[in-house]
Image (cartoon, rainbow, N blue to C red; front, side, top):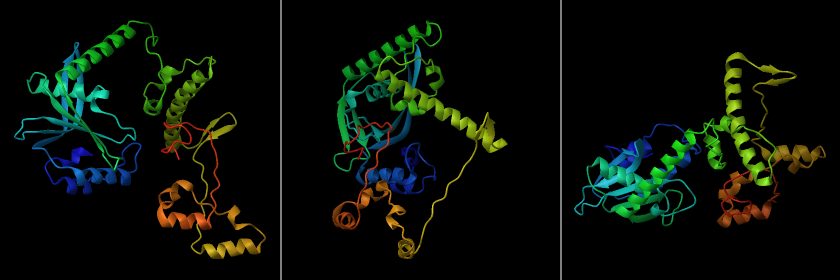
Length: 305
């Protein structure tokens, strides 16, 4: 998002962004979040966008990218900003990313650690979207020590045979993990939590396999495996411009029209607020349906609803 801001009016830059989809987000939502930020943003002096930071810690090169760096105002204060699409808010010092990036940025500037302002801008939050703190040299020192500890753990694990030193830690990150097949040492789970963790790993591995199969089928046609075929199958969705005529036709044939007409609750969600929502509830009936899956919020939570 921020890469489009460099060298031109920020709002116009976002409007002219290439029509590409951000992973996990619809383009329309991504632009809406960007515009929400720009309406509130006021630069603090000179700003750098998508600034690359790198440095060496414990003999290993670290590379990162700062969404926004503001510097050069009369106070001499450096402000670094990271944009987040998370629903959960937290302070910059609660995680190691920004303290470590601040350390690397100052090192690139040939400066010793000094106080740096850090902002997390939570784009989904209309009210109080910014979490801001001052990063001290102590924060940066702890971040460097944390990175050194991680490096040591990785080096120690690499000394072990195979993948023994890398225990799976299943979670939402399984969706994009490139090492899913290294998790496939399948044994019968000893408890229900292990079963859930194994399901997350298998789900990701299955996604990878299906992607490969789709690529093969796209080029070579349906793939037969025993008595099953992998291929592109289709289903139909009917739309009726004159919905009243359709309902009357079904009623005349002795069918209940509402057995054939449904509205997806997720599509109605934004309309169910305010006076319009009250009118919709008066003429319609919500019929909850349940399905088994996993999400980052527990069932029944506000964000999950």
